Image (tube, rainbow, N blue to C red; front, side, top):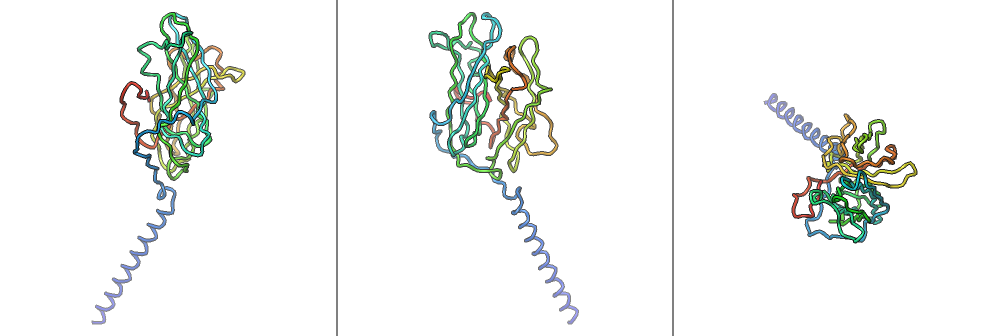
Length: 274
C-alpha cells in the first residue's frame, strides 16, 4: 500500500512540473516580439478615395530619346502630413500635350497607375513612372494624382506599420548609352515579420539635386520586405531609355513597396501595374 502511495505522489509531482513548464513556455512566447506579432487588418469597407491629404511635395520629368521614339520619365515625392497611415494609395501618371490632352501611347496606358501600399504618418515616398509618348507628339506637362484607398491608425513593428528603409547601392547602380539601367538597393524592415513585396519605385535627380524623372519595378523583391538576417541587395532593370543623361545616379532615391497582404486582384482600367 505504501508503495502505491509513493507512486501516486510521484506521478502528481510530474504532472505539476509539466504544467509549470508549459505555462513558462507559453508566457515566454507571448512576451517575445514574435509572440506579439499581429499584422493589422485593413478595413473591409468601400475605399474612401481621399484625393486631398497625401500630396505631391516635389515632381519633375524629362523626355528621353527623339520625338519619333521617346520615353517620358516622371518622378515625384509623395508626402503624408496626417497622423494616420495611408493604405494602398493609387498614383496615376499622365503626359499631356500643349492642348492638355494625354499623349501616352495606347500600349503604355496600362502602366499609368501604381499603388503605394503604406505611407506612414509624416513620411515621404519617392515614386515614378516611365511612359512612351505618341510619335512626334509635343510634351507640355505631366500630372501625378495620388488617391488614398483606406486610412489606418498609426502603429508600429508588432502590427506591420514600422518603417521599411531602402538604401541605394551606388556602385551597383548603372546607366548604359541608350538610357536604360540597373538600380540596386538594400532594404531593412523594422517590422516583426515579413511583409509582401509589391516592387520598388525610385526618383532621379541631376547633380544639383533637381528631380528629373523616376520609375517603377513591379517585380516583387525577395529581400525587399523581409526581416531575415541572411540578406542580399535588391536589383532591378529600369524601363528602356528611362534614365536621362543628366541623372546623377548616386542621388537616386528608392522605396521598397511593402504591403500587409497580397496585392488585390486587378479589376478595371485603373488597376495598378504592381
